[in-house]
Image 1: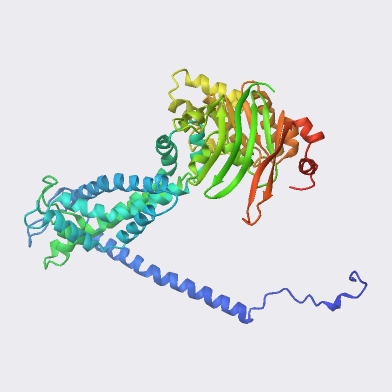
Image 2: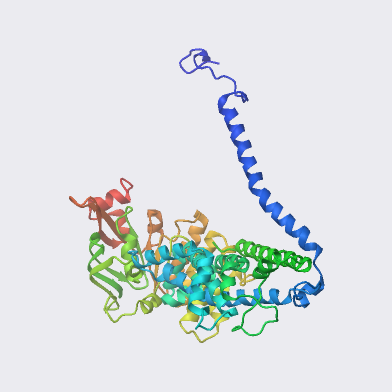
Length: 299
Length: 260
């Protein structure tokens, strides 16, 4: 073979293309890959252990009575946690009813009606981010100060729901805002182009397109709220009885675990484990639903 | 020329303090296809979007001069842009069906404008006019996204004509389509022009010669000192004249492919 100029091709040595394992570049590559893999394992260990521990201990005490009976008096055996399961569902429902409309409407305003030259929406977004970083116990104390402390209505399911709503709001606003922004601008033009008003465009075209992603945010917020304990201790308190109206203290799974796990009685400890398991399953279930909802996303 | 549907008179278009287009005066004739051609950044789409007040969505947008629709000032303070857009529909560069079923894509516009008649019939007529009916009649309840790009664009055209506008603005409707879909859209335009007035922005000069009755050539000019460009209407005449014997040197250079 000759090159164009007629010279033999040994002027440029093509060399071997085989991989040289021992070269420093390749060694570095292998080491870093191994290191990253190891870190993944380390990160997964706590997750696996926690789940494993909860499952092993909780599964032992799982039975039908859990879902039908009330907690027994301290020291005696048997009983269930039906009121706490019910309570968690009720408190989370209250917080969802409060936070979803406010959060989604706020996101709609930010994404669809905010002005081009930033100012107000930037401040609102900044505020939402700050709120997302507020420790949950602070949200609890805040609602305690407003709704619970002496002279106010007192401990209630409602107060618990409001406290959780405060925690859910930033997550919902942020995910809904992002979800709405992903909807292509052309769709809005198209809707306006066939003679829709701004409100019709947002409500009938943009919002439906963003719903799957918004639902994901809402379920994630619910999953987080369901596991919160600190804000509920100050607000919903606890109750050994069945649900008695949203203006009364109410039992929740998270607070039940907190109360019972540290009692010196075996029956209560087992109930705490069972409650932990049910709580973990609830959160897992909502997360899976959230995953499922995202899969059907429009954009 | 025949009846004038849309008229721009000495229009300057600004974004903030930036002048994007200067001194455009043009009469758009009824039931004809008018093509806007010209190099990028010469303001063709900007002018097009002024006709149905879509530029209102850009906050810094400002129009000086007068734009009229059958003699009515489009930018008079008591004009409702929603009413304008119902009469002057728009088809965009990228097919942009709503994330709804094929049926609802068509039905959405008429529904919100309070259409009381037989919706099934309207959907069918619109799809037939857009020459899409035979391809979708068995899957009206499927998502608009399930269609190919060319079908989606015809769906968008069907959606636009379902609200029975008088004018259809098309902003490079074939830019994202293959040649066969492009030809279908062009045939469709020739079909539609019997009932509608069409303005089409295109970068494809063959397309302008194939479909347009009239052609407007826009050009851009560097502004001294400002570092930007301002678009203007260089020449407007019958398509035949523009492509065979234009008045302006720049038009001749552009249509013969010497720049742009």
